[in-house]
Image (cartoon, rainbow, N blue to C red; front, side, top):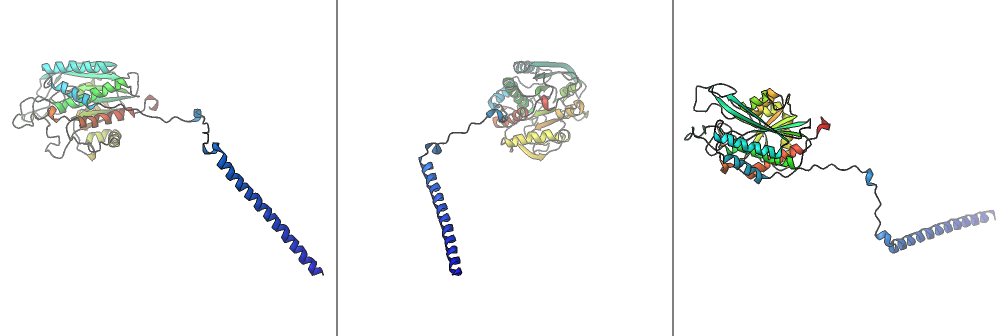
Length: 361
């Protein structure tokens, strides 16, 4: 009898647990059906309202606007120089072109300085020198020096048939200046964060001609730059860095990393090349080191102390390492290519506008 009562209790317990499970199942089923009804009937769930965001707590994303470099404009500035004729120190063309360059700088720069002096060339005679400097954002302490020579070599001494004849100097002299005038025009329209000093140097290319064998004096090139380095346009002038443009307009130009540039300012070189390749100009700015060239930048580095690089067209295909039209009659407007001017000019613009201002000194 006792055993029968125990069995009955166990059965009653099982029945109670079963009822609990059944009740729980019904509750879950009801919740499930209710949720279906809710989501199917609630139009606001199909079109949820945006959650308001407090935008005052969001940090703005910094954007850097780099103006578009106008290659057509730069080409015209090059052509304008060439039309004066070879800009040889001591000629009428020198005086006329100097006046034109001063006019351009006055149009686009805050202040313009003109340096005039006589400098002694390789044979002991003196030639008139005219350096021009245009300054932008004069109150900025952090300054970038941009330079190019504007004179023309008196002879096409690499041209065997025409060694003693003058030539146009469209690329060697004209192109670097043309890029910097267009850059100045853009700086005038949209001021960069830093101060800019544009230096046009004279009597750069009056070194001894190849057909003269008795002259072996050193430092006979870049005479205008040497003068400026000893007599800067402002007292104790020193730029954060400098960029020299020399022969930067020819078709299919090739710019390796020049030796003195890598010695004195490797970080500036690498930054410029990185900008160029980011813009898709890696076919112009090649990741290759070249031999050092005693150009204007050498004297800026050694005499003024501003770390300065040289953007210069160099090649393996000539015995002298320069482009085939170097100091030749063929250095005329036919060799100037807008695509090359664009590659150099746009990269220069990006380099300048990406440069932080005084607060990062």
